Length: 135
Image (tube, rainbow, N blue to C red; front, side, top):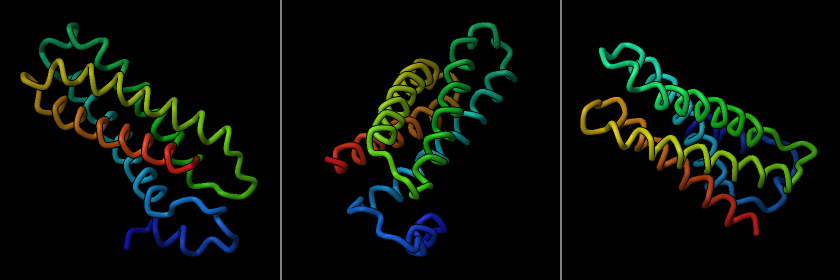
């Protein structure tokens, strides 16, 4: 059992019917994607062709920030606001799609971009699945 799942299990109040498995998967995907995007941006900065990776670096940085914030918002349950949660998840899915699309363009040449694109796709899917389960 992951720390995320353990923490959700110890929450003293009712989570309001949220699908715990989907919530756990989304929180973990957000933090994994934030790390992948941060590392990919850093790796892009080390490439000889760094000038050609400017958009990728920017998209990675934005996606990392959005994913990190989303993971933190999803980790808080007291005073839950469904509208805010839905908006944050939509923003995260959009950031992951944009970053995944950008990194995919460089994946054939840069392995870090391939790995990052995959993390972005997983996070986008996890966000969309959690949104769908919110009703």
